[in-house]
Image (tube, rainbow, N blue to C red; front, side, top):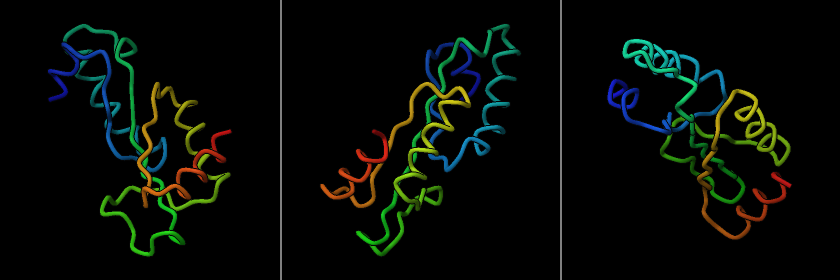
Amino acid sequence: MLAITARWADLWNCGYLREPKDLQEPRSALEQACTDIGRDPRSIGVTVEVVVWYPDLKPSPPSIDAYLDASIADVREAVMSFEAAGVSEVMIQLSPYTDEAFERLTRSLL
Protein backbone atom coordinates (compact mmCIF):
# COMPACT_ATOMS: atom_id res chain seq x y z
CA MET A 1 0.00 0.00 0.00
CA LEU A 2 2.88 2.39 0.71
CA ALA A 3 4.14 1.93 -2.83
CA ILE A 4 0.76 3.11 -4.13
CA THR A 5 0.81 5.99 -1.65
CA ALA A 6 4.34 6.96 -2.70
CA ARG A 7 3.38 6.99 -6.34
CA TRP A 8 -0.04 8.68 -6.28
CA ALA A 9 -0.94 10.31 -2.96
CA ASP A 10 -0.87 13.95 -1.94
CA LEU A 11 -1.64 13.09 1.70
CA TRP A 12 -0.91 10.01 3.81
CA ASN A 13 -2.92 9.25 6.94
CA CYS A 14 -0.82 7.28 9.37
CA GLY A 15 -3.88 6.41 11.44
CA TYR A 16 -4.42 6.38 15.16
CA LEU A 17 -1.44 7.62 17.15
CA ARG A 18 -0.85 8.77 20.70
CA GLU A 19 2.29 10.86 20.16
CA PRO A 20 4.77 11.82 17.43
CA LYS A 21 7.33 9.15 18.36
CA ASP A 22 4.73 6.58 17.26
CA LEU A 23 4.97 8.11 13.77
CA GLN A 24 8.70 7.46 13.29
CA GLU A 25 8.61 3.85 12.08
CA PRO A 26 5.67 4.16 9.64
CA ARG A 27 7.02 7.47 8.34
CA SER A 28 10.40 5.86 7.68
CA ALA A 29 8.64 3.15 5.67
CA LEU A 30 6.84 5.80 3.60
CA GLU A 31 10.08 7.69 3.04
CA GLN A 32 11.72 4.48 1.80
CA ALA A 33 8.80 3.80 -0.56
CA CYS A 34 9.20 7.33 -1.94
CA THR A 35 12.96 6.92 -2.31
CA ASP A 36 12.41 3.67 -4.19
CA ILE A 37 10.50 5.49 -6.93
CA GLY A 38 12.49 8.73 -6.84
CA ARG A 39 9.87 10.90 -5.17
CA ASP A 40 10.64 13.50 -2.52
CA PRO A 41 8.84 12.26 0.63
CA ARG A 42 8.26 15.88 1.68
CA SER A 43 5.84 16.20 -1.25
CA ILE A 44 3.33 14.02 0.63
CA GLY A 45 1.50 15.64 3.53
CA VAL A 46 1.17 13.55 6.68
CA THR A 47 -2.05 13.33 8.67
CA VAL A 48 -2.84 11.46 11.88
CA GLU A 49 -5.90 10.69 13.94
CA VAL A 50 -5.92 11.07 17.71
CA VAL A 51 -8.63 9.63 19.92
CA VAL A 52 -9.22 11.86 22.93
CA TRP A 53 -10.91 9.99 25.77
CA TYR A 54 -12.51 11.68 28.77
CA PRO A 55 -12.83 8.82 31.30
CA ASP A 56 -15.00 10.82 33.67
CA LEU A 57 -17.57 11.17 30.87
CA LYS A 58 -17.29 7.57 29.64
CA PRO A 59 -15.84 4.97 32.01
CA SER A 60 -14.94 2.34 29.41
CA PRO A 61 -11.93 3.16 27.22
CA PRO A 62 -12.18 3.39 23.43
CA SER A 63 -11.77 0.22 21.41
CA ILE A 64 -8.71 1.76 19.72
CA ASP A 65 -5.51 1.04 21.66
CA ALA A 66 -3.86 4.37 20.84
CA TYR A 67 -5.91 6.95 22.67
CA LEU A 68 -5.08 10.04 24.67
CA ASP A 69 -6.42 10.07 28.23
CA ALA A 70 -5.42 13.55 29.20
CA SER A 71 -6.17 16.92 30.70
CA ILE A 72 -7.04 19.97 28.63
CA ALA A 73 -3.39 21.10 28.70
CA ASP A 74 -2.17 17.65 27.64
CA VAL A 75 -4.51 17.55 24.64
CA ARG A 76 -3.21 20.92 23.45
CA GLU A 77 0.40 19.80 23.95
CA ALA A 78 -0.20 16.58 22.02
CA VAL A 79 -1.74 18.39 19.05
CA MET A 80 1.05 20.98 19.03
CA SER A 81 3.71 18.25 19.20
CA PHE A 82 2.30 16.62 16.07
CA GLU A 83 2.47 19.98 14.32
CA ALA A 84 6.10 20.36 15.40
CA ALA A 85 6.78 16.87 13.98
CA GLY A 86 5.62 18.03 10.54
CA VAL A 87 2.10 16.59 10.59
CA SER A 88 -0.08 18.72 8.33
CA GLU A 89 -3.43 17.69 9.80
CA VAL A 90 -4.53 16.17 13.10
CA MET A 91 -7.99 14.63 13.09
CA ILE A 92 -9.56 14.19 16.50
CA GLN A 93 -12.11 11.59 17.49
CA LEU A 94 -13.85 12.18 20.80
CA SER A 95 -14.82 9.50 23.28
CA PRO A 96 -17.53 10.03 24.22
CA TYR A 97 -18.89 12.12 21.40
CA THR A 98 -20.90 14.50 23.55
CA ASP A 99 -21.37 18.25 23.94
CA GLU A 100 -19.27 18.26 27.14
CA ALA A 101 -16.38 16.42 25.45
CA PHE A 102 -16.54 18.82 22.51
CA GLU A 103 -16.50 21.83 24.86
CA ARG A 104 -13.41 20.46 26.65
CA LEU A 105 -11.66 19.85 23.38
CA THR A 106 -12.48 23.36 22.23
CA ARG A 107 -11.07 24.84 25.45
CA SER A 108 -7.88 22.83 25.05
CA LEU A 109 -7.25 24.13 21.53
CA LEU A 110 -7.91 27.83 22.16
